[in-house]
Length: 221
Ligand code: DX5
Ligand code: ZN
Image (tube, rainbow, N blue to C red):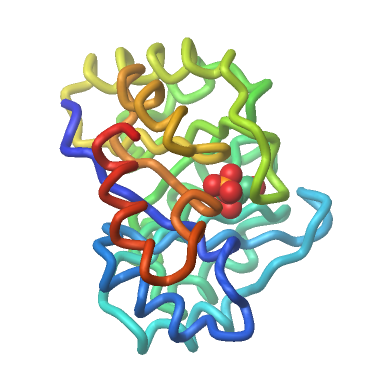
């Protein structure tokens, strides 16, 4: 079941010297989720921020914190992100051998669980686990950096994931992440996505543009 399109601004593209204000401004501008990209310099070739920063931002808004872990290993850090106020914790299928164990640990910590797939990882990877997932994240760039170009070949995968989700009849978000802008948002929505992560496209043009940017993305660009 495809739900209304929701926008999840990635604060990776915001002004890090003013994170508190940026999160508030994004929330006020109509964000549905706040997307928090955690990078460890090991699973991906970049380092961003961790649980303590997320915890300090928790006081800024009661919007859903959608935490995207680009880290390996995952399991030792789940408690810390749950304690920091994450409502959804998404980790990568490529991050370790015991995906199902990690899913169980995230649920036991009281969070919704998402599974992310890199561009080279087939859609079918989710099939054995789909009955227990709350969110599937299709990467449309190689994770690690904001501001990259949307990989168009992923549209077929998004459509395949949409069909798999609909087959279950379960309430599972289909989120796309990377290179979403006013040209690609509509393609991702048409392929079946119902949550769009948008870093660069949200924060372009200064704070007075955030609301218009979010609304335009929601409408497919
Ligand atoms: C990439 C991150 C994305 C990134 C998106 O590794 O997972 O969430 O911030 O940035 P844009 O929207 O600029 O491609
Ligand atoms: Zn992300």
